[in-house]
Length: 591
Image (cartoon, rainbow, N blue to C red; front, side, top):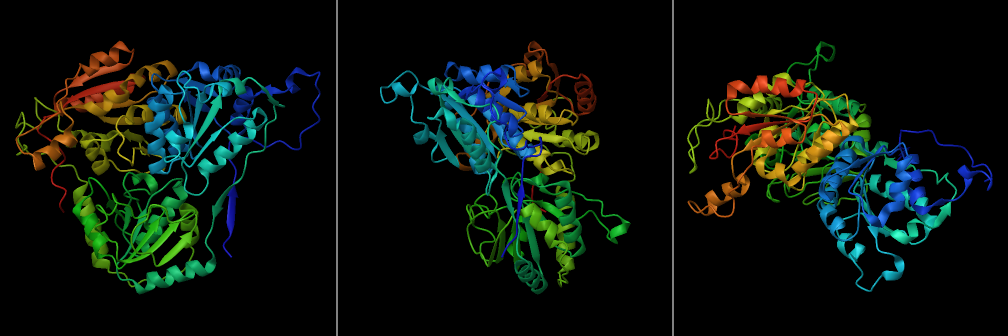
């Protein structure tokens, strides 16, 4: 029988049995449901809530007034949702967003969809109309379950005020358990003001971290020993420095290449310095990522492997180039819960928490007869693919033929500077668009929880994620790479950053178009661009108007000093990078 580890949120000590309530003591009088929600969030270890205020949850806001939980007031519900999602991605504890009914919930929907497809823990509290007004087309009335039922792990409405603490505890548990995801909690405004119970709340629920049985490890070891070209694909949440480093040392020792799922690049350290104590040479077993922007060598590995072990990452459409690669190789799948999101062959399924599974796996003795030449070629290909080289003048139809120099900024040259300047544990954020191809390819990750980017392709996430990353990890450097289209979808959250003391550097890549869609148009409808042109402001001046640092960069040679000035400002900073409108991506991905 498999073992199961349990884990509680880390941030507090749990009290012992409750003492009898003294009704004469104001501190022991029953709280309202709204105040009890706040008290239970405190007990769950929540440190911040993000949101736009609404009259539908005034009692919760009143409870937050005296709470140690910081209330981060955002400028848009989409920004609040993305901040909560980023907090969940970076800390493992569900990020919390609070929005009002109807339009507020609609604006937050994008973050719920992202958290669901990205398998990230998150709570969304939605203020609702009074219970007596239901079904009468009241102001801002909507069907909470109808809207969110297909894109959340659970949707629940608080109709009994005495259940407030229990519902919060259960929602945190659901969001963190198995395949993580978002939980949506409806809070009717009249129910929130009703007496709910004493202030103690309920004991947080333990979260299971299932572990594989010894027999399952022995079966996997036998598969490794039979394979000549074994491949490991990592992804999912909650990877630690220990689990990532141990996997990479083990894989390097056995000449097993390791790939990352799309936008799960921080699961394991890149370019791990193996060190003489391990008797190893080279830069570790990490050989790149799959999905959009991947190198051709990564796709070939997926095709050529005779054993593929997926750790925390199901074989989905993005990873497999639209269900066309690696579907028929011998497959081992390690996921908590079930095989949701996986397509193709499964020869061994292990229901286990992948980072914990790794720590057990590396203690098992195995002597695979690996194809060392195949492994070495993969490492060499990855090194070539991730080494910045000047971008050649574009050959596509566009507005210019000068990709850098004094007229435009070459993003590849920018990445070369960042590789030298960024601290080892820097957090990188970005949304969706062609601008993300550069950091995904060229910026290595050496620490866990160092990437926040939407796996579902949602635009507008980079700046809210940078705000949350800075607040969650005030001692770490944060850099966001944003396209001009992506940036202005939630760029107003720069005001939130200024107001709450978040510090990061945002690189806004200005090429005057929705470049991803323009690239598709150039392939399918050459010479007929339509609906993709953008009219942009002076982003640097715009940033300064918020009280942030702003500077425009038009030359490669000026970027380093501009970046150093932005970093030294101690403010949220925007560097407005003017990019050649004809450049769509880094130099060829074929290696």
